[in-house]
Length: 128
Image 1 (cartoon, rainbow, N blue to C red):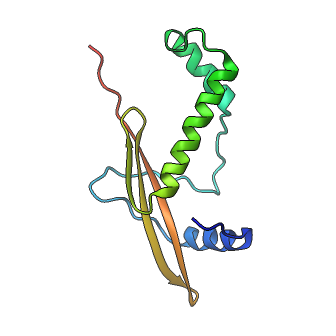
Image 2 (cartoon, rainbow, N blue to C red):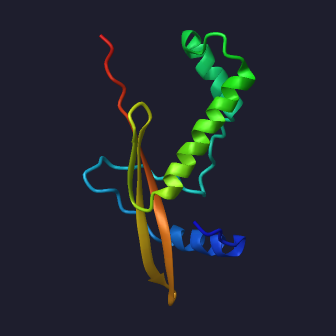
């Protein structure tokens, strides 16, 4: 995918904010995060520490730096998979479903193109 200039990205982001992203078909309601709302930032090391604390057996003797390298590689590949997908869905059974929808329209006499990314969390399975 061709790189866009920061100026073009700002314009696309402004146009995308003006358009309400419709919920993907045949899916429960999707909660959309707004850039106007403050986001809780969780760093990858914080998330990894939490995961190791809650899943000690899974991590075993894996050193923290090695676990972070593995996690970064996972998220990088997830990001690449989502970038490659123009429209459709990516299902990660334990995590959830990422759905991508292409948007186009016209606002203030200017045409724009954009993408909406929805995420539906997988429901945990009952253990028992």
